[in-house]
Length: 343
Image (cartoon, rainbow, N blue to C red):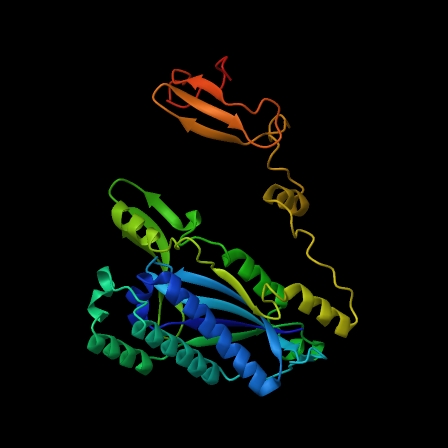
């Protein structure tokens, strides 16, 4: 089975408007990309593929750069669910994907404007008037809405001989795994931290797509400001699925695909597990057990006032009433002194 990795971008002219309307316009971004792919797959191949989408809001310098990483199966179920069709070779023309994606996004953007659903606070204020908003739309229609596509799959020996660099499915799964839930910057890229500035590594891209790695120095205030740009509002999901992987049909469709292909469908082993159980199942490590003494650890609710700190064990733990700990139970560093008798 082959897969395709696509990257959907938006013109930078829209950055400030999207930032001030993240819930509405990020939803629109997801729906525009998935609708473009689902429509074209149905028109050209008469299939509904499986789609996984991951949102990124940042570039390597932590400025706003909204884009979607999308993994789509090179095949899918026919509309009547009677067969599973695999697409070999040419899949979809990138220009068609880009045009359909732009059409869906701009149509949805103008619909939200007409209904008064957009906010024009702060840096988005210049686009509030009808004339300025139309000028923004005109500029966006002129821009190239980049969509990049790369194929991953299980290749024949002949394909491997022709091009040994062909990427495997495991390559893109590893890529999505690393970047699916990452923050705007990893600690490995931070070179130096001081009161005067924070130095970190970034990629300086050239017009041909190549880049040089360079160091950038930002004041602590600017570093925090840029990092904060990428904290998503509550309720915005950055990982979404569509097609036969959509949440409301995924289990049923996957079982049907395995039935058609003559394979046994085995649901995810970690489905329904709590986070501690997932860690134990995948890494054979129990995070609720002390790594030094091996004792079972328990979670506690924490509250405090001017005179004392209060702890209460969560879950089925004996003695679940609050424990009162006077404020003087602290060590020289100001932290709680767990050797104090009250503990």
